[in-house]
Amino acid sequence: MEEKIEEKFKSVAANEENPKWNNMISRQEPLYQRRSDIRSDFQRDCNRILHSNSFRRLKHKTQVFFSPSSDHICTRIEHVNLVESISYTIANALGLNTELTKAISLAHDMGHSPFGHQGEKILSSISKKEIDGTFWHEKNGLFLADRIELLEDAEDCKRNLDLTYAVRDGIISHCGEIDENSLKPRQEAIDLAKYMCPNQYNPYTWEGCIVKIADKISYIGRDIEDALSIGLFQKEKINELKEILHRSKKESLNNTVIVNDLIMDLCYYSNIQDGFVLSKEKYEMLNAIKKFNYENIYLSERLKPSHEYFKLIIEQIYHTLCLGYGRENTKETLFKLSKVYPNLAIRFLEWLEAYWNLERKENYQNRVVFDMSKEEDYKKAVLTYISGMTDEYAITLYDEIISF
Image (cartoon, rainbow, N blue to C red):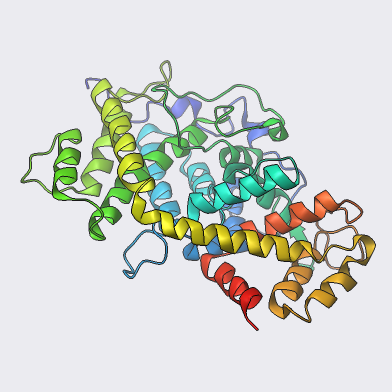
């Protein structure tokens, strides 16, 4: 570890001297301008993300453990904040743009469904069967940011977020399931619609690469901490984990130590030529922890009953809302459905009216998303609506469906 950490990546940071800069700050549509504003492009993105409903709802979405009795179990919003903190530490030490890492970090999990990754799997299964498509939260996050999330401008018009390309790219490129020990940004500013699966392309910026790595570092130790607090591991498993982490049996399993060791190692061994890399020891340790977590946490028998519950809730909401489709008469059909399911049908109709190609309120200046002449578009709207729900709201709607 002889090479200095200090600002090794400053020459490739996201700033005006970077040849990629114009692509990085480009938007699908220009944002309205205030008379005075002291914010940078990426700071404006941060604010737009913070004010979005998708970001707000993360506080009530499962990370790994559903409906914990303890307030100290990680939820999706805590995970996002952990990613932001870790990415800031790395970017700040290496001389990269911390405003960009913050914006990407805040937005990276906007597309997560209720009930964590299990909810994502259920929506993907429905999507494959019903509309011959796939659902994955990185792609859904970009879809929400580009088409669904709306903010009011100074003239009281609702408009799309229209985030910068660098942030949009960071959202869809953030997949934390990385197995390679060298990560560099791609050179081309591709059309992000070309993404067909998670992890298909590297991020466009070094800052996006940091968030991709911070995503993995943030959850791998935090999930262990939660599992320990709920008593998921037997003593022999705890000892096995300590061996992986090179800790003695007397030492505690401290998440902050794990995170700090990985951050310091990454900063020391990374450079522009080789990209972001870990030492052989820490890389092997990270993969060993990931393997341990899958075997002992994510695939635990203790989680399976809740997984069956999630499947029942999401599938029932989906199939019930599909009864509301009526082509150009969808509004009337949903009104009829509301006689039986008032909360479910009316709330969905109010949401859908902002995005369909039928009559909309004048102050909705956002792009049309769903064509009601196409049943597939309606089904995609239902899947998108469900993906934005919090755990509790999905349960509330399910309870309405099964109640008399």
